Image (cartoon, rainbow, N blue to C red; front, top):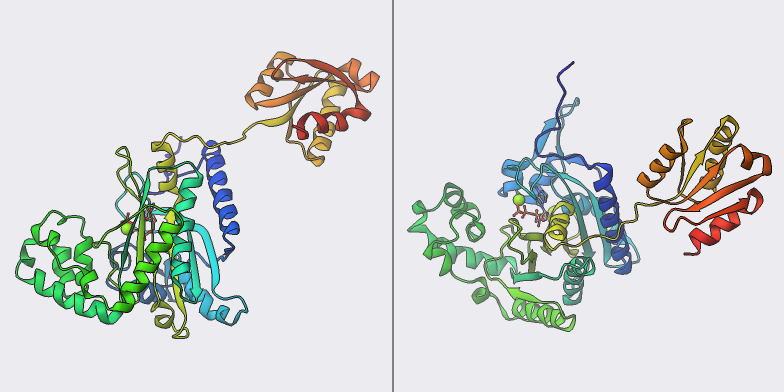
Length: 427
Ligand code: ATP
Ligand code: MG
């Protein structure tokens, strides 16, 4: 036997049993997006590398360490998308969606993202993100709506133990001043911090606060707070967003260490965490306002934006850790059992007809014993079986058996569709 070729590290096959759950979640995400009046945008899975260098940021872990980048045959540097915002904003600008009569544009996406990361439960190299972007205008109401959408995705699936962590990043001028204060605060002891933090000090000091290694250091705990560097307008904006969250009955906690290091982020930043000790990666979803990004990618300066992204992998882990079963219907309507040559031939035609009529139907492909065929009907979780033998063919009748209560009825072929319609679709 030849050696098998295995799946690449950090990826997974979604097998038929699991794919039902994925479809359920995807349908749920699409439905809730529509209720909030977001429309789907589909952008390519690969983009020019420069888009992410500019749009995600040269100093981020994603761009520095995690991208799948390669040269194509035309010698262009291409990257498999590590996230959805850059592509969405590129498309918004390139297709002039800012000229649309509906403003702001409310967009959502679902699809695979790629990051070269250390494999861990809930962390993959190909993972599926759902995200939204609201681009065009700015309002505290939009920020609250976006957070409410994210929050209600989890709530509506029955995940109760969640909380929103929220912070404000102010505007770029306020942040410049804050960054200077952080440099002063950390510089004397930066040699005791991890190598990443040492690099961050000059390039991106706010990211030190986000470090996963040095969290317990004293300097981390008493670092200056951005809130103290905000002007009246930024404070007012933040307060208004929080008061809208109160109105919408969304539980949140202000976390002054929740940061995004890049210049184009402004005002609201948030994450949704799960409060469950069984799950290691507690952040399910992250988002925030990025008023500077549209201009940075070559769009009109006055265009503002906010968005979030979550992964379906972590959503499924959250459901599992909360012991939530999705209401998945994996039953079929009818299994057609046939005995004898003529009946076998007829069973294929009948099954085809049932399918065309909108029933989920399956037949036996082989001339097996009736017991074996009934066993297969059970494995398919059929609600009904239809049994055809020589006698039935002669009398133009079939036997319909309710697989749950085992009741059997003999039904004339001409009445069969109506009978099933009533029994199955009328449920
Ligand atoms: P983390 O701190 O866990 O690395 P991140 O800040 O890189 O997350 P974002 O880029 O904000 O994550 O992506 C939004 C969401 O996508 C995260 O909150 C997380 O739920 C999910 N996510 C990120 N990376 C992965 C991955 N490699 N596999 C599965 N889900 C992921
Ligand atoms: Mg990451």
